[in-house]
Image 1 (cartoon, protein in one colour):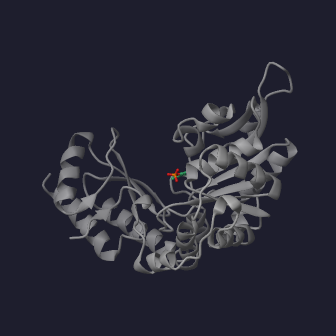
Image 2: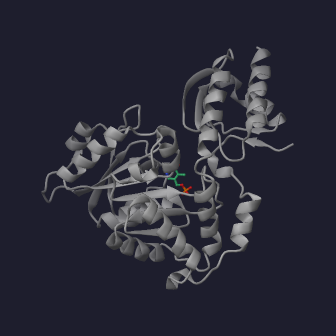
Length: 339
Ligand SMILES: *Cc1c(COP(=O)(O)O)cnc(C)c1O
């Protein structure tokens, strides 16, 4: 029985067609800039998203780190959501490796950073303070696509305060597909965007940072410093190109399945639906039943991630089909029917 793994959209495995594209990739030494497939991927995303240049990196964490280190100098500060991946889930890399001070801002429920709170956190120009340089947003945030009018307001705000604007767009394409807009319509508001190919897009490895030519030149240097200069990475870039060609429009299927799953779970007594956004469903279950639920689901060939909270995040992706979703809804129903 194939396992229905709802822990994250990072668990996808490359399809047969993607593996074939990887096998066929033309490669070269990317530290010399000579891998044609890496170059094609970088060119493709820079053009698609409306930027001068792009850099293929091993992970979203590294893409964000290189962006922060390229926008900011030692002793600078960046403003970031208190629950943002960049701030909270990347080991404090900006501070640890970049000597960049984070200033967390509590996100509103929709993932936006209220601009009046951001304004209040900007430091005066004075030797007492770090130099506030950058505002970083995340889209999607907990599955939510940030409103386009907010992105415009954030861009105007950043320009007005001479701040650079970075987007952690790990799931940029989920936001675009959900909003019925191009990824470029979202990306255009930012000075740099980091995109994950290894989440819902289904590539095994890789993220891409897009930005201006001078920014990407700095990022390329920091990538080397961070040990991320890679050689015949074209085999991985081929997976990314394949994902961009074949796995973007189908994100709508993941969103549809998540909405369907949410609708089913809403009807299950014992489960409270907290929300569903793009490919993520959030539910609460009684904390004292979490372990038993996990065991029950495992028995049915379903993996979920249980933390110390009763809130579950269920994530749909390329490797979850309609039959898999049916299995999940049945398993929840049968577990909670036992009372
Ligand atoms: C996954 C993710 C990243 C980066 O993840 P890596 O595992 O380092 O590739 C960054 N931001 C968000 C919002 C993510 O979900």
